Amino acid sequence: MSFEKGKQLLHLALMAASRSQGVSLKEIEAEFGVTYRTAQRMIEALQSVFPDLSAVEDADKRRRWTLRHETLRRITAVQTEEMAALDQAIELLATQGLNVEAERLHLLAEKVRAFLVPKDRQSSFETDYEALLEAQGFVARPGPKPIADAEAMKIVTEAIKACRVLQITYRSRNDNEPRRRQIAPYGILIGLRRYVVAQALDQPPDDRLRLYLFESIAAPLLTDLSFERPAGFNMQDFAKRAFGVFQRQEEYGEVIWKFAPEAADHARGFEFHPDQVLELQPDGALIVRFKAAGHLEMCWHLYAWGDKVEVLAPEALRLLCQDFRRADFPALP
Image (cartoon, rainbow, N blue to C red):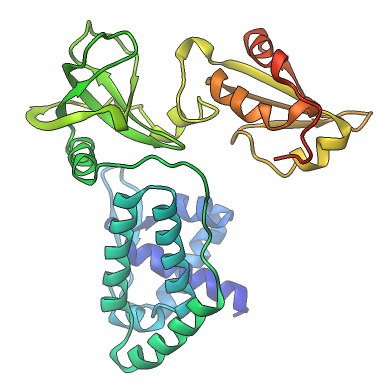
C-alpha cells in the first residue's frame, strides 16, 4: 500500500470512528473525490485492517460503517504539531475578540491532551511541544475588535442549540428607546461585528430573517418556549448572501468589479466571495463577479483599493463609491 493510500485509510478510519452513525459510501465519495466503486474498495481495505468494522442501515436504508477499536486510539495519538496548531487557533480567536470561542477551544485542547496523549509519551510530548511553541510566533490581527459578554454569549448559544425563544432588550436604529423583544435565534454571523440571525416573534409573522447586533443585546433571557428552525435553512448559504456580515435583502443581486491591469495580479490573490467568478480581460484588467448584499461593507473594502477598482454593477454601489476613489494610496490592501 502506498503512503498516500495509507493516509487515506487512516482518514477513513477516523471518519468511521468519530461519527455517531458511521460513514456512508456517498460521504466517502465526497470526502476523497473518488468513484462509487473506489469507495467500496476503500471500505473493503478498512475491513481487512479493522475486522470489527460494522455495517448498519440508517433511516433511509443506506449502509453506514462504524468503527470502535482500542488500537485506533494508539495509532492516532496526537502530535506536537497538531497541538501547537490548535493553540495558535485559540490565540487567534482571542486576538479577534472571540474570547468565548477561544475558551471553548482551550477546554477541547485540554481534553485532547488528557485522552489522546499516551501516558508513556507525555514527558517527551511536553518537551517537544514547548520547543515548537518557542520556534513559531502566533498570528495576531491588529486593529479594533468587538468585546463579547461571555455570559450573554452562553445564553444565546444555548437558545440556538436548544431551539428556545430568547427575550432580549434591544434598540434598533428606528427605536427611540430600547424595548423588550422575543426572537427565535438561528445562528451567529462573526466578522468585524457579530450579528444574531433570528426571526422576530414580536412583529407580524413573515419569512424575513433579521440581524441583531450582538453587542447591543442586553439582558438576554432563555424562555421555556420552543421554536422550529425551517428544514431548508442553512447558515452557510445565508452567510454567502452577504459580502461581509450585515446584509439587506433588497440589496441582494449581481456585483461586478473591474480591477485595473496593475492591480489584477494582486486582486487574484483574494477571495472576495466564495462563489466569485474571475474574468481576465485582453488588456490585463480583471473582472470579478458574484452575488451578494451588503453595499456599505463593500464600499469600506473597495475604498482601500483607491482608484485601482471600478464598480460596474450594481448602480447603487457605484454611486456610493464614486466620490471616494483615491489615487494617492502607496500600497494595495
